[in-house]
Image 1 (cartoon, rainbow, N blue to C red):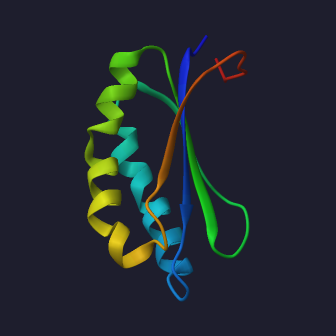
Image 2: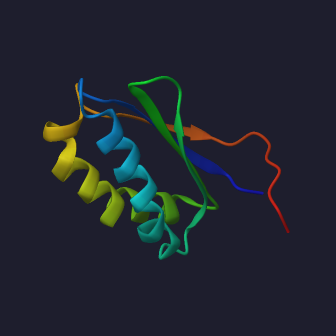
Length: 100
């Protein structure tokens, strides 16, 4: 069972919604290269509100993700794309259902 997760809320600047969606879609290839990231989802709640949810077996995987290429790219593009600083919340996974 996965033990830890992150939930990151993102609010796009007006007019940057499609760019945020494209950024998140392109980030998957970077996450695919992270063996410690067990699951990763980029979702859209409404026109300008997005989130990333990911899960990890241990803190080493979570910390590697937080210091990895996706996080760096997000922070590098945050001022241009986002209306506010991303809200990163760490959480414990209580239950999961994953393939395999």
